[in-house]
Figure (cartoon, rainbow, N blue to C red):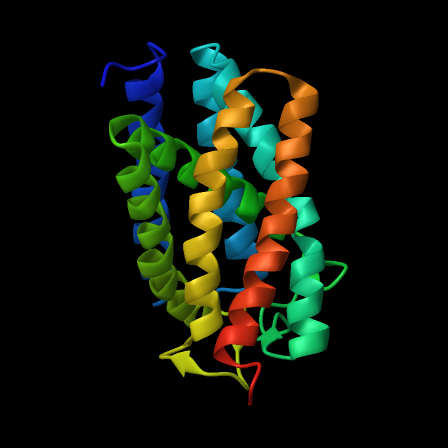
Length: 226
């Protein structure tokens, strides 16, 4: 299918570059025993700098909108983190240290911003190719991608899980939740492409609510009967 926006292909390559950067960076940080909250904050600031550079140089209003969408998602997601930390008691951020925002590391909204942008752009490209198949592939990518990051997060002292059913260091409910979240971000990206800021803000709030609902539902399925 022909691109809807002349910047679509270039934007996809740029965002894919941040995905590769993150995969390589967290892999290398696994060999850094001094890693803590500072490495998480630094990596996400670098991701944001890369994204903002493209948006400014190419005057890409859509990517700028996605960054706003992702930032709103990141702050709205703090409620989900608080529930995981205080209610399920399966998530522990204390291993990373550093300043906190409610029950999350202060840099966590930036991390979710980057994740939201990545899945919105990649998912949008896949859905432009084949709507239903692309959405399913996006959701699967979310589910299979997350165990790597969760395992690395434990090794590089960002966070860890316990007290739930897990594969390696990744809870089953996180895998299932990410399946739902990644697909949801791809769908919400269409709201952002409309270019209206109020719609973008609403999409971000819905994205944050989606994260909470996805984790809640997934936790009930995998661990609720325990």
